[in-house]
Image 1: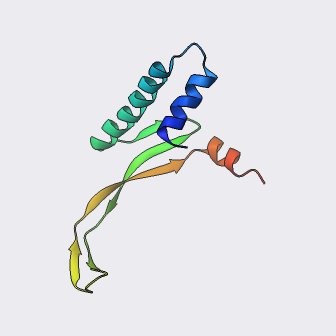
Image 2: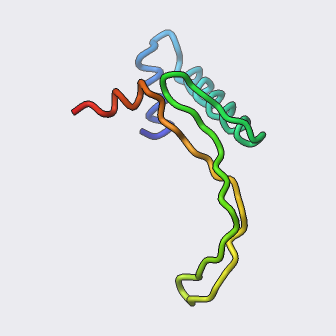
Length: 93
């Protein structure tokens, strides 16, 4: 599901919301999660999951085209951990 599909579905499910209002709501949620991660904190939505940062240390890699060694710097990458309720809904067999 893309961002625009999420906005459309939200506007359809809640007819009191105009598409513009649904778009602002989705943007506010995504911005809040992004800003929280940018500060180094974690964001949790109960029943859905949590967003956090994982540290990846510096390492030596290779350029796939030339085979030359390159240094990949250390960095933090976003990580999503699924909540229990979401995991149970997805694991329907």
